[in-house]
Image (cartoon, rainbow, N blue to C red):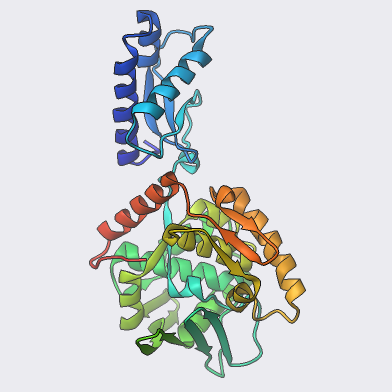
Length: 365
């Protein structure tokens, strides 16, 4: 089945409960027709996906009215706030990309709040700031700092492999090729060399994290990997103990399908990850000033007007592929955020629960 088992079970429970309530008001023929529709999952709009049985009767002329009645019944009696109705899918092909239970990728929270450079940096030091937190990256003089789309995709892959394998040491083998295929990156010589160069830059940099609150100050130094080795057999990475622990208790889930759609723009990837994290954590409406947004995302732009133009363009791309449009507004003073709907929160909670079940340590975001 293309849908997660939990999604399928939730859909079945809610659907058949609604049918039981409708038995008193609908004729037997209509009830029989509805029982011939099999709930198989839940789509990204929160609707139960139905597939007709092979020997199902032809839809009655008033089938649309029937589905409307069923949707209303679900809305009234369902305890699951994420269910917004039903939809019949007549195609028999896999519809994984429409499922809210897509394959997940993970990023460390610190690299979402304070992102990597968008373009190549000539200096050996680069910093990002987000409120009371600051990330300062220092490069090896022979290697340079990581930057751009490939650095972000490599970081996504490394973090996801750490969650999947629960190991500090792994090789970039079949899973690496599958990841590049998923991102539709053709494995040509120059492109692979560019990606491996970004992996080397990520592994060669030192990350200084500074956090200051009213009651405390904390400084920490982090390496992504303690060893990176390339040979004729492939590439082998041994994660540092610090990065290994960070990615066991502070990661954020992202949808691989959306990452694939935004993979050409580092700012779009950063914005998608940040909005996913902030809207999940948000308890009340809040406006983020343009100055704060620039410190976090655009400190490598020479002019603020250029950053704002690129930011707006990237925001349009992100909202096109996500469910965030109703809760993000561009205003004169900055970006206005509104707490997400119950369905968005429940989806994220499920993704975090899945990540918890696949790691040895509790995960918090």
